[in-house]
Amino acid sequence: MIREKVTETPAASGEAPMLLALRNVGKIFSNGVTALSKVDLAIREGDFLSLLGPSGCGKSTALRLIAGLSTPTSGQLDWRGSIDRSNIGFVFQEPTLLPWASVFDNVWLPLRLKNVSRARAEPAVMEMLSRVHLTGFENAVPRELSGGMKMRVSIARAMVTKPRILLMDEPFAALDEITRFKLNNDLLELWQDERFTVVFVTHSVFESVFLSSRVVVMAARPGRVHGELPINAPYPRDEAFRTSPGYAALCRQASGVLVDAINSTAGSHNDGH
Amino acid sequence: MTAIEDNVLTLDPEEARRARQERLERIGKWVLPLAIMVLAIVLWDRICVWNAIPQYILPRPGVVLQTLHSDAGLLFSSLLVTLRITFLSLLLAVIGGVGLAVLFAQSKWVEMSFFPFAIVLQVTPIVAIFPLINIYVDNQTVKLLLCAWIVAFFPILSNTTLGLNSVDRNLRDLFKLNGATRWQQLRYLRLPAAMPYFLGGLKIAGGLSLIGAVVAEFVAGAQGQSSGLASRIIEAGYRLNAPRLFAALILISLTGILIFLVLSLVSHLILRRWHESALKQER
Image (cartoon, rainbow over all chains, first blue to last red):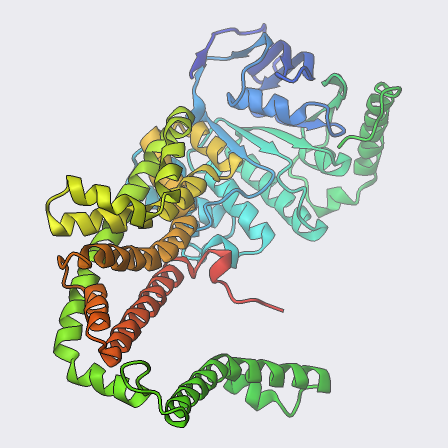
């Protein structure tokens, strides 16, 4: 399915052009659950946008809508210019690798599905592997890798087609903190070099603030956008930023908005899943 | 093994005990069944001698072994006949089972429509179907093949169908996201994912195709139409040639064991790098 619709919002004072706008988007599942209600969201070219919120707030649903894995019940998604699925990279919560295939073959997969031969894909695959610091592991199979390394393979696979937008669904949630910090740094490095657009779903305040240029806080029942917080700290961000007072202040601010979002749902039971 | 032995002095008592235990278990796994078998054979021999049982009722193991040697020409040519039916029917079971499973995987509706018939075919005893096959099919080999195939194809079909349908949901999304065609999804995702299930089915089907071949020969052999091992057994039974009967029986058993071992090895070689079932348990 290719969705194309040329809609350029008047560029707000010198900002990057809009890549995608969700307009009044709602999603109701067949079991009657309203996953998303009246979501308006503008994603600009080169954004690192985090969707932050409690479980059940529709973050992942929003991501699947953007990916085209699901269609909205109401409202629409307006892409600038034409975009098809090959412009979209997706990183799942689990590494989601083919367990029988080598690291190389896993990264090659998206190109292979576009009928790119192994030989022609090799430069791109090897380059991506070196970008995620996995040179030398191309012949390993997933079970021989640690959790963090598997996730790196998953990122390399999503990036090997040079997508315009990378969608990440709580990719580091299952990793230990040390590995997670490292992957955060590496992801930012990659993003700064390539300047693709990222939509990053997380329920970690700290992670969202560290990574993002914008944090969109969502509330649950029904899933909706509660507020938005620009993170006006300069890139590159490194370990020094992670321990700076500025970072702490931003985290406090984001936490405030998140608590507010959670309280706005209070009254209904608030236990998530 | 050597690593454990080298380290045994530096290990603490608990680890040393564990290492010893492991070594014993490793040896016991082979030695115990062999010992039991040898014991049983000796007992068999003694019972024959003590009770002066005549050879046409229960031959002594030595006599069976002798027969295996003296009748080797006859028995092995019969074994070849049985093996041919076994492997051909296993091959057809693989082609038919996997083919049908792939067909079923294309659409839930196809699966819903046809799977029950596969079950009907499976649960009806082959001995009961054979007289019908005997009426409708003329060619002797085709008759036997059909019989063995009916017995062997179901585990492959049912396991492969299960495997094709148990692909990780996210992986399916990934393929969808990358615009994979139906064929690509089958080739790169569903067939490899189904491999462990298929190999499990294959191991069962290997034994069943031998059973199917022997049962078919039995029924056909009763009418003097077959030259496989089963017909040797029937023939030997008529002639009260118990030693040959036992020799043929042993050959069939050994064949079954060999088929199982070979298929287990194939399965291990294919899965050893990635599948849980083929990985060594780690403490």
